[in-house]
Image 1 (cartoon, one colour):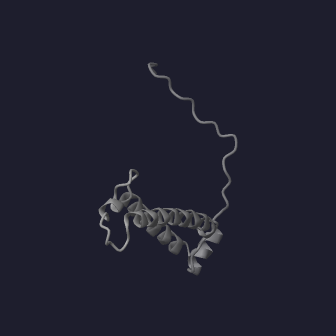
Image 2 (tube, rainbow, N blue to C red):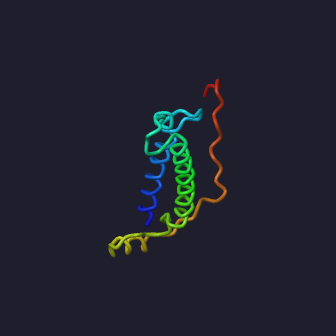
Image 3 (cartoon, helix red, strand yellow):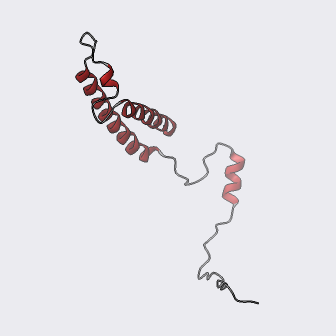
Length: 113
């Protein structure tokens, strides 16, 4: 499931990038190329389509990102079907962090030893 969500996020990002690059903030871009009156989609309809596409893809990206939080695999143990590896993992000793560890003092520059 994580792979599917990651691919959907990637495809959404690529499409969103392409749609934004096609637009122009000053009314140019792809919409200015359709100035002919007998075009299938006029200038205004093209600009509306690009704007709606941008908002839709942005919302989809947000949705997929929020969904990915719940499907990201966590590192909470051995995730293997190999019984030998699982057995070895169970035999490993539990290690505890070192308490009261003080790093060695830093050497000052310019002092000779």
